Image 1 (spheres, rainbow, N blue to C red):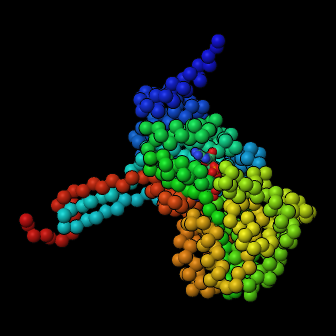
Image 2 (tube, rainbow, N blue to C red):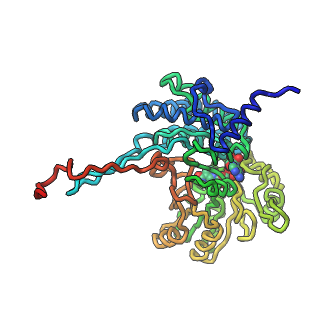
Image 3 (cartoon, rainbow, N blue to C red):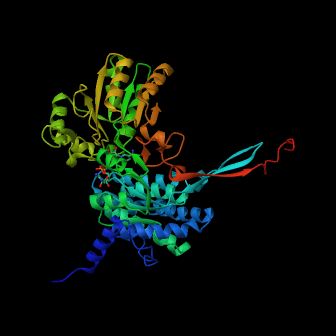
Amino acid sequence: MQFDESIIRNVVAQVLAEVGNAPPATSGFTGRYGIFDCADEAVRAAREAFEKLSERTIEDRKRIIDHIRRISIDQKVELGTMEMNETKIGRLAHKIEKLELLGRKTPGVEFLRSEVYSGDHGLAVIEHAPFGVIGCITPVTHSLPTITGNAVNMIAGGNTLVVNPHPSGKKVAAEGVRRFNKAIYDDLGIDNLICVVAEPTLESADLIFHHRDVAMICVTGGPAVARAALNSGKKAVVAGPGNPPVVVDETADLDRAARCIIQGGAYDNNLLCISEKEVFVVNSVFDEMMRAMERAGAVRLNGSEIDRLTSVAITEYGDPGKKKQVAAKEFIGQDAAVLARAAGKNISSDVELVFGETDEHNPFVPVEQMMPFIPFVRCHDVDEAIEKARYYEHGFRHTAIIHSNNVRNMTKMGRMMDTTLFVKNGPCASALGVGGEGYISFSIATPTGEGVTTPLTFTRERRCSLIDDLCILGHPAKG
Ligand code: NAD
């Protein structure tokens, strides 16, 4: 009988890690450029890289991040195409654009700061220190872009990371990580700042969640991984699911609202967690709003077409008695023309979004569909629209949008929704600094409350106090 040595090595490493007795980090991982079959080895390599990064300057961190930015921007077409071909969801132009956006706009070391308290009793300085190795779980909807954003944020904070990517986006994750690490190693001589499990499984995720050398977890994904991270016993930053509702009131600029809903709802075929998912419109402008959507280029489905689409695009999942409606995998992130065909309608492949009137009980309203079909629900007035938006957001406290020129309505909705992102009169992505103010990350921490992640999200506060000296203001009485 023949044994595969690498399997034995992995099993031994896994057992040692589980009993908290992993061998100390060695320097044998250089040249792997972050690619590991074994999750335990990936963590140990990232720990070794963390020790090396800790000896470097902030300026070096900036240089490292500049390589990640450069590769994301310069190689966006090749890497974006790779992501599209592997995941087979979304739209190529947006896969490419997302890499550029994350490369350009994710906050890096410039976001770091210290706070100072100076007074009668001297000086206290609060600085932001790294955690160490951060375990990351990334979604299929943006495999490499999420890694790009996480890596920039986390390395700016002085950390290293181990990524367990979604199995359907693992190849582009590994290739991106390999390119990042190689460029960094060639320039600065440190390898494995970003490690990736090449064959990710739920078991490798679990090993990372419980590894003694992983100081913190950051997960980006749906309800199951959010729950797993919160149960891990480690500090977790959880970027969980959303179901962003849109309200349109009678004061809105309807043509502008339509353009924004198409821009946000059709982006990457609605894969963004912040994308417009369902729209509640007050009755007095409902019909005009539907015409505005058509003027802006979306195609309207009628009732029977919506029923046909719903019957194939929404399915059930779970044990008998506990079944939940979910988006059907075959339709997630597909083009509007594919959805229209399933509804029995032929439309041009240029159409970005299909839409139609439904009541609130159509499953497209409660389900996070991640498809470019948007249901529009007629409401008596703005209060009913806001109340329904609140209900169908499911308490995720993720993202909500209003189109209105009435500040009372904006304020009322903002207060009631209590979401992490609240957009007024723009497409969803304007909340991430794309056509609006602010900065980007593709990990928007919702249940754990950190919001759009930054380098400071991945740091620990440390306070250094000097008593009675170095405050140079005034002439306190001699004690
Ligand atoms: P998903 O939940 O199916 O998978 C996300 C990741 O979690 C994958 O790597 C998957 O392998 C892993 N995973 C799933 N169950 C797990 C478990 N029990 N233990 C460990 N790992 C587990 O989601 P997806 O389809 O890849 O991505 C879409 C979802 O992610 C949507 O719900 C979307 O709203 C959410 N999302 C949120 C944000 C945010 O910033 N809040 C960003 C992007 C996506």
